[in-house]
Image (cartoon, rainbow, N blue to C red):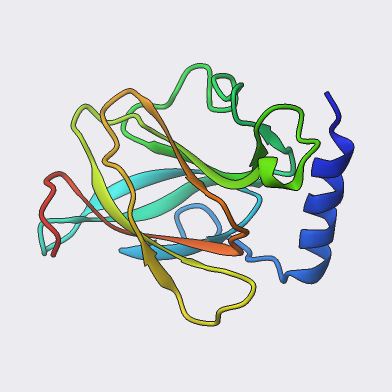
Length: 168
């Protein structure tokens, strides 16, 4: 596999983009937080008064690997912590990554709760200052999910986790 184009794309991105530093574990509980490209985190939900969930980052690390989109089954914890959500936000590619069109922005998530979770998301691209809403699929319990965007995203905000599909 030719990893050089992926590594070069990631290094160039990181050199030109300010890094978002995640909160220390358990420092912040919020309904929405934004994470920079190259993030791997574990979230813990906290029920709020409006019927949805706020969340806390209980584990965070930089994720500098380029994801081979066909091979994502081993990226999340082998033994997941119950009642958490695992998320990786990174660059990924199809095939061998020899073509620039093979590269995508990827978010991989796993819901380690025993009920489906719905949430909203917004992103910021290098060309835009404002966050833009995006659609995301519900996270079914115990399953891994993948979201792909065909363009570079600097930051992803995860917003308003809830147990029902109704937006608030």
